[in-house]
Image 1 (cartoon, rainbow, N blue to C red):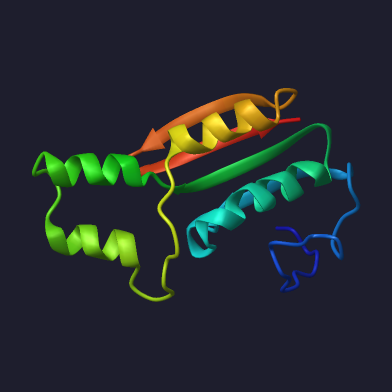
Image 2: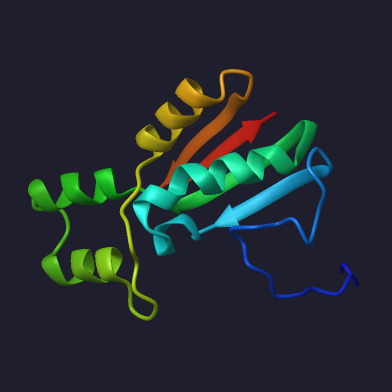
Length: 130
């Protein structure tokens, strides 16, 4: 295992952790949904700024577009839908989709490559390479 000490930090500002252009990889797992939707571009922009050339940003989360489609088609009951949208603990503040995040990156970071998009049920993985 990795013996490096882990520390708590404000994930929206990594300045005290890594300099710009120095990170090999940043993993944002189930994080973006707990920030207001209008903060999403600032977060992604900030994380991409920290990556070195060839560095990877992995964003994982729930694809709420898929969730809503399954509710519409009757494949997901309301109780499960409610838990996905509002969470069971911390209050979720926005509902993202893989297609929306991919579109944002392609439009605003044309030099960043979308190197992987994958679904596992309602969860998605978006891998970006700088």
